[in-house]
Amino acid sequence: MKNGLYKYTAISFLVVWCFGLVTLLASLMVSCATKPEVQVTPTTDYAKTFRDVARGAVMVEVSSKDVSGGGSGTVIWTNEKQALVLTCDHVVLNELTGKTHDKFVIIGPDGDRVMAQVQDRQKAHDMALLLTLGALNVKALKIAKEEPNVYDKLLLVASPDGYRNTAAEGTLSAKSRDSFLGEYWQVTSFIFPGSSGGTVANTAGELVGIPRAVHNTMFGILPEIGFCIPLSHIQSFLRGYKL
Image (cartoon, rainbow, N blue to C red; front, side, top):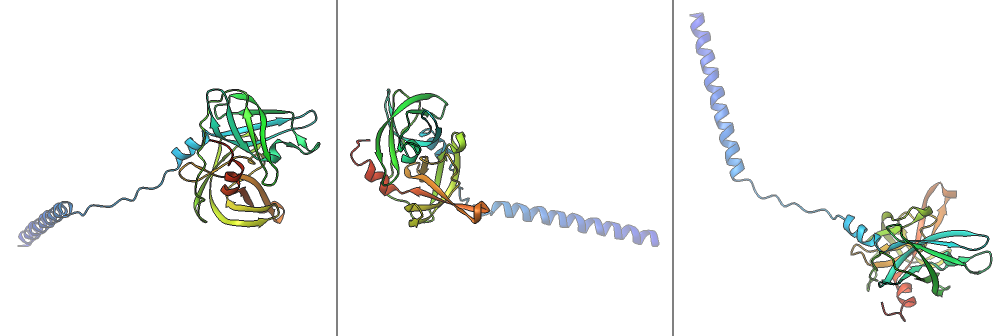
């Protein structure tokens, strides 16, 4: 009697277990058949834009008899023989003499080097143009027609401390910021010594600004505040050039 009860219980358990398994499989099949389409929102990838911008970002080496230094620049025009490089005036200026440096070398994104000369300067907004004396394997960046809005994403490529094609992502924090330098854009992006004259681009890869300077806060303990030359100054400086 007892063995028969155990046998009956085992059979009942097996039947219930099989029924549960069949029910589960059936529900899964129905679920898979009626599963709604999932909408996936693609994430923005700026890697390609950074690569395009980097083809127009160059390093600027300057030297005179008693001093040498450097900065960054952006190629805004090029042909098979020459290129125009936009940079900051304080990059080309020898502060010891108050005149421009004696020698200028442009280093392209591939490391090729070519001599250059000063083509134009605008002291008021700290901009200068260098004309290369030879060809470079670069791509000229298009200058944007419209300014970015506050809180828009910015892409910065420069050569801080000689490290070519250093890329950083940032945001336009404020316009018409009256800093210790004058009226500039405030950006949240890494700007280091050597970044001056570099490239600030929008997400379309168009030039919208030039890294200019940083303001140290709390003796460098807190993050620095970056400033760049705005698009309107660039457009005004280059108005006479057919690019």
